[in-house]
Length: 611
Image 1: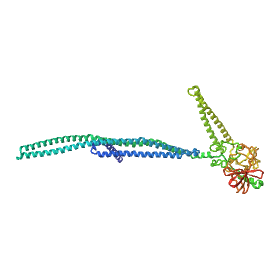
Image 2 (image 1 turned 180 degrees about the vertical axis):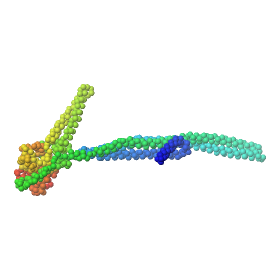
Image 3 (image 1 turned 180 degrees about the horizontal axis):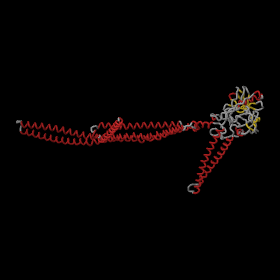
Image 4 (image 1 turned 120 degrees about the vertical axis):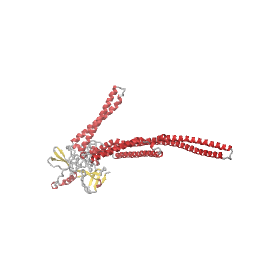
């Protein structure tokens, strides 16, 4: 019951408010400044001036807001530009997180564009309209006030004329009264002659006539003043005040429209901004940590397997003469190089002076890699080759389409010579054919590289870290004296001798680009043809002539493949000077009438070069 009463009271209250608003609107329609504020001309002038000032203040507010919007949009664009991925970071664009960030930057750029749209729309639509309206209102107000001042001046002039006529009438009336009194006294005075009495009578008659004339003039001016005053306050002044009312209503209506218009400008870009926000959310949701993890593996996976266990060597069962060689061998074999790891692309490539004799004299790419990418780990090499093949296939497809277009154009020109000269297309067609042929040759070349890379067996440690090869069903191990010992396959794999010079591109060896095998220097003799040998060794060269001698200043224990140990004070032959990587290639005679070659730190030796 209480709820019903409450709802009924609320409905009645809302109905009363609605009725009041309707009555107020009706009364406002019936009321006007001309009738209700006929005597408030000065206050209305002040009110209209303040209203126009408020409109101009709103225009200044919009100008400041436009400046803020423009500055905000500009700063957003600079922010997006500053955080755009650099060229050196393009390789990270494959990760979903980086793709999401790039999409985020794109959406923020779109947001900046929408803020610019808001700024331009406010400037062109709202501010321009407010400025024009304000100027128009000031001109109309000035005219209205001028007309009102003219009407008031006319009324004031008429009132002055009335006041002057009234004063003249009052003076003439008093003079006529005095003249009448003077005539009466003269007529009763027996001492005055008849002529004097007649003079007083003429004066009285004249004054009475002047009084009557002044009275008539006063009556006339009074009628004029009343008519003018009635017309002024009933028609002329209300018309001016109503014009001021229309002017003020126009300003108020414009104020409303401009505020709504500014909101509409903001609302018009709201859907696009909402889509930008949806794009940002979508970009964030597209990040997949598992996919990024897989791409990291794909990028840096070398294809090598971890090193095998180092076998135990029983020194009591070894030949005493081979103990030192074995020690050297163990220090340099079965060590993984850094090639194929995350820091592999930061390694400094060392090019030996005998690199010209190798078979892999590939030209380098723009990023310093070989043309066939043979300096990369197996997996990375195959991926690079596949990407290169896909790129060439795309270029071939584009060039084929271009050639077909030129051929069609030539056919059309031949059919109708007025359209063009077929010979003008001939040169372009020949050039296109040449490009296409070159691309096909490159494609075939890289397909051969890929086929060769797919056939190369994956090394168990690092490239050429273990020189044991299968030959005729036996295990062949390269020794420092250049001989090859055969072992049956059922035997355990043994590490290479210390004198073997690895061609893997470790930071110490620097031989990743030489691919040469020196006879008698631990690289195997020239008559060995192990499986896969052509992958790494295709040319045998003569023993390097020494460039000078060096003396070890400090002892050095070889801990990486390609380096050799040395004792303090030991004399060695220099066969390759430091190429700027801090390593010098040296050689020593071993106990097997062979040579041990490898690299030692340049700072550990004192060199004396031959003249």
